[in-house]
Amino acid sequence: RCVGRVPDQLYAGGRVILEAMIAKIAAMREEAKRRQRELVTKITFIAEAMSKTETPVDTGHLRQSENGRVISDTEGRVGTNVEYARFVHDGTERMSPNPYFTRGLERTKVEAEALLSEAGKAIVGKVAGS
Image (cartoon, rainbow, N blue to C red; front, side, top):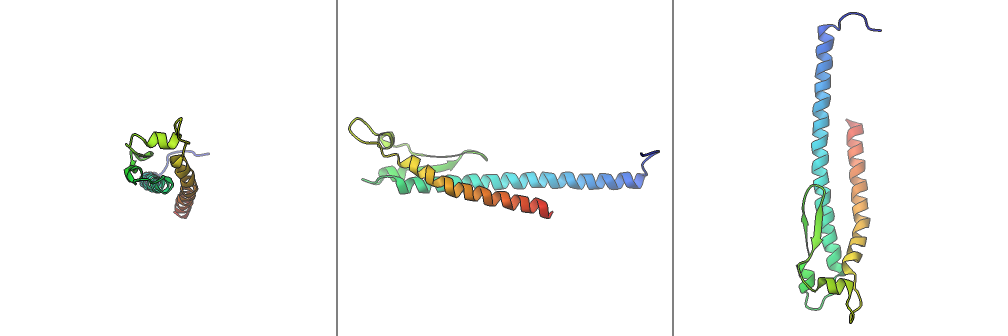
């Protein structure tokens, strides 16, 4: 049980420690945000590469048209603007489906999970070590 006033030196020391902890938390948030953006970028471009390796090639136009771009710190997109891509992927009455994009994304999952696991371990190690 505490009786009386907290000495000014103790109060000031506690305040300095608290401010340092707040600054450290802010720095950790910034680091986490930076790493998140890096991961989204890496995973987006891995997905683009994997999709391209699965894309059937006749003239090469469909494969060349595929691109990945980072939309935000949490979102990346891979796609194409080629009109016939949907028909190749989903098939038609006269053509069987060739879900190249789906296969590429499935292959991306393995690498993405490894990257996420590695990043999680690095963050935990950094927090535990500090």
